[in-house]
Image 1 (tube, rainbow, N blue to C red):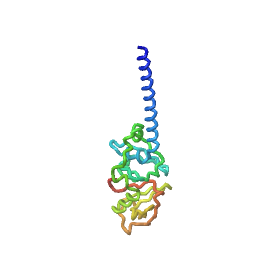
Image 2 (image 1 turned 90 degrees about the vertical axis):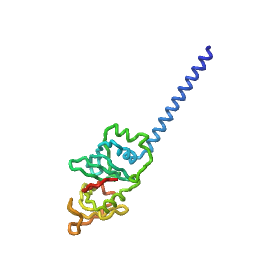
Image 3 (image 1 turned 180 degrees about the vertical axis):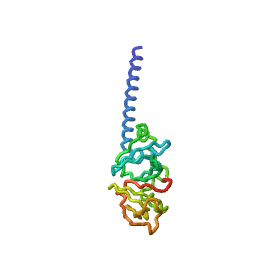
Image 4 (image 1 turned 135 degrees about the horizontal axis):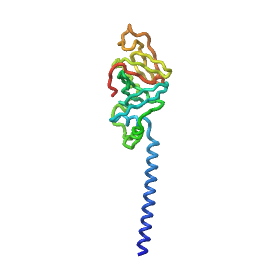
Length: 201
């Protein structure tokens, strides 16, 4: 009888040690998973319904508020939460911080947020999106890291910069309305506001 109890105690002790070892391995695996998760992956998780309202601190010191509608390879599309509805495209490297409710921060880091990209938008680069705006002749306002804003229409988007035909906001791009053409490197962009309705993917 005493031997039975002795072996039961040993089994219980072994079970406890195995459970502790399993918990330690699970915890280490979770830390490793989080250590490998890039920001862009967390941003993609925030486009799911219901998309939270984000407060984006930007490299030029400004703040934007809105919902993430699409996330590409190096950009984020936003539905702006302003009195005048609008949309914007932001390079991810122009973000200085992102504020949101804690529950959404935790949701963005969950394991199911680590699924591989499924759609075309995830593979599109900023240049690809800007070329789409140029093809459609969408009027934009470009916000630069210097704090300057320039209104116009993107004539072309090249490998690492764009050509912007400068004209008054809200005006269509016509030769007689263009006051200048500016070459703007992508790293100078903080955000590009679309001055005409367009679904960002």
